[in-house]
Structure formats: structure tokens, C-alpha cells
Image (cartoon, rainbow, N blue to C red; front, side):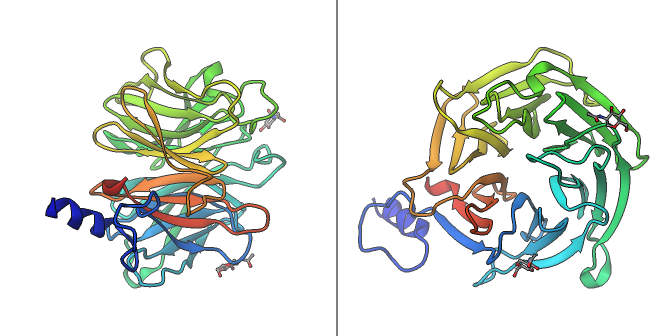
Length: 324
Ligand SMILES: *[C@@H]1O[C@H](CO)[C@@H](O)[C@H](O)[C@H]1NC(C)=O
Ligand SMILES: *[C@@H]1O[C@H](CO)[C@@H](O)[C@H](O)[C@H]1NC(C)=O
């Protein structure tokens, strides 16, 4: 009993609440919101706990320390030649690959502008060193990105428009297509964002992905080199008549996925395909277009980032998963 009271209090943010039972938002807290229309598209956790934020703010990557009493983003580096950053994946200790392009209409890159860069944070003095490692000529989108567990210098990227998974070697710059499938591309529903595969993660030999327009979460077995070696298996599909669209996500070592669900929710999907909403339109902390989720190394905390909405800027929200 005492243990559970202590746990409850430990899950409350800020001053102790007057209500004895945990309120549904006691586990979520907004750490920061941009004062302008900066759209945060993705997030990664550094080994020291700080966060890298990929934005549509002229290709800027910001860095934010969530442990600071008043967390504030600092502009870390701008990727030259592009203005939208999408995927992010760690390829080496303190080295991250990012993808992006020049904004076209409707979340689509200008054809031929897509590229992958590495951002190396191992340099003394804290400066980030950027290298453009590959240009991908014939695509209008590189969305979520994941590094291969057995060859992390190789990353997979989702082409949400043309239904392909690109495979890029960040050391040599070689790019090929790991596989293509209609279920990687968007469906025909005009009421939902026209993007297919969005977030990517690899767990236990499977590539997991969300498909925004087709509104499902699925997996496909892949080889150690990242090529598809089986059929796509759907794990969860939103019921008909719901207009949510799954965006980027993160998975725990138990195979549970935490997914940003457009336009207002954070959901979890268990390995057996059950969905639970952790934050939604009724929550005290309102998510304004949640775009991605990253977990801390201990998997006790999730950071949700958002794109902002109706003139309000993107947010960084901390969620204590042990308390949900
Ligand atoms: C938006 O706000 C951030 C944080 O204050 C700032 O660094 C960035 O330059 C701003 N962007 C624009 C386009 O003004
Ligand atoms: C995109 O550019 C490539 C050349 O890099 C061209 O072959 C392709 O047809 C273009 N696609 C579209 C849809 O314009």
C-alpha cells in the first residue's frame, strides 16, 4: 500500500496534487513549445539524455536538455541545401543519420532534392559536423528511418509516396531499394494525409512500420542486410470511420510500440495487437499534431514531439511510461 502511494506521488509532475488518485495526465508534461510555427518532425535521444529535434525550420536540428529546469532548444546545425528534415537514426556512437529534402506541396519533397546526411557529435567543443552522404534522385519522400541492428551504418528509409524502402550505406553513399510493395505506399483515401509508410523500427528480425493513409501498423521479416524476406503482416488497423493517421514511433525491448497518432494522440500497441490511447483530445496536455516518439535507454520515459497546429508551435512532451 505504502509502495503504491509512493509510486503514485513519484508519477506526479510538479507540486503534489490535491486529488489522491492519479489523474490521467499525471504522467505527461509539456517540456517546451516553440514560440513560432516551427514544426518538429522527429526526435532522437543522445547517450547523455539530451534530445535532437529534426524540424521543418529551414533544415535546422535543435538540441534540448530535458533534465534542465526550463528546457530550451538550441540551434545545433543546419543541413545545407534542404529545408525539411524527416528521419533520424543513430549510426554510430553520437553520430546520427538524418534525411530530408526541399519542401514541395502536401508534405512531398521537390523531386530530386532528397538527401541523407550524417551529423557527428563526437567533436570536442560540442560542434556538430555535417556530411552529406547520399543524394536520392528519383523520390519525393524519405520519411521514417531506421539503422540495421547488425550493420548500423546502413539505414532504411520509407518512401511514403512511391511505396519503396530505400537502403542507404552511410559510409559509401550507395543507395538501393530494399523492397517495394503497394502496402508501403498510400491508399486512395483523400480524407487522410496522402502518405503511406511513415515510421520504421526493427525488432527481432522484423521491420515494423506505420502506414498513415492506410491507417495500419504492420511488420515484415527482413534479412540481416535489410531486404524483405517474407510477407507484410498487419498487426493493428484503425476501425473504419476514424480519421487518425499513425506517424513515427518507437519500440521497447518487449516489442510494444509507442506511436504518435495524428492529429492529437499518443497510442501504444502491444505485440498481440491491442491499442491503448495514452494521451488524446481529452487529456490535459494537448498534443498538436504528434509526429514522433523516442524512448530513453531505460524505456521508462517517452518523448513525444509535435508539429504544432493553427499557428501554435511544435512541442516536446515528456511521458512517464511507468505511470500510465
Ligand atoms: C523559432 O524559434 C526558435 C526558438 O526561439 C528560434 O531558434 C528560431 O530561429 C525561430 N525560427 C524562426 C523562423 O524565427
Ligand atoms: C523525378 O526525377 C527523375 C530524374 O531524377 C525522373 O526520372 C522522374 O521521372 C521524376 N519523377 C517525377 C514524378 O517527376
